[in-house]
Length: 346
Image (cartoon, rainbow, N blue to C red; front, side):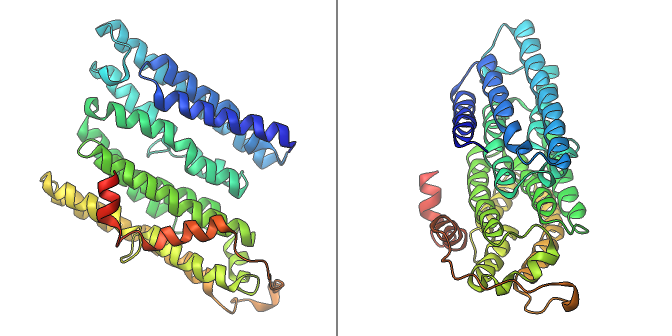
């Protein structure tokens, strides 16, 4: 893609995100979401592959529907209460429609069907953008409206997201689809706690973004899109494969890695809210995700592919690991001992 075009689209993404997260009026928030959607469409479809065009079309249709629901919900609320302020969402019907709209924007179950398909049609870098940066504005809206939303509905959506995200990812061989279902599962953890402790949900989102960025950039360095490609990647970059193993285990939430911190704090907060049974259910559902993370980790570090005749060994790559990957993977592994400081900052 033309560098000038890339600059324009990236600037538009930053502008749209900034408008949404800094606004307190529904129309400005909606404007930011629309700018974001229009800016990311060329990035998805830049390869001109039919799958990329299909992904861009699906993304546009879903995001346009969700934006229309955001506008409709805010107008209904303004009509009934006279309030356009984001934090003053009080009409029950508006709250219900807004929950559906934000769930559609984020990819929460049952509005998740578009997300794996769109990620599969995108490149790894665009997939990283869709999994992290594009989730930030709707997550901010969820944060600001969390006190108005129905706790039972959000808890139900969260449990379903953790279940479907873990269950549907088990049988996948495409890495981008696995990462999409991983994102859906993590969103379940964020949605379940957003009403009771919004800051904890944001901490979870930040750490998820950190670990997902480390995984996507590592995969982009070794150009792995399928599990079969990942199995032969160890010859290309052995150190990166070893780091990827640990980062995936961190994303799975195993102690003593960074990913354990948000899960631990969320379970603790749910227990304080007399929701011990919910905490047990979502913890058990995270075991489904753990299975496909372990599968990815096994494929990343396997030294002999099962069908050696069908796979060509890749040339050893002497290039050093990029600085961004090194920083992100280090943070993905060592943040748990720094948790008191992290919590003090949040």
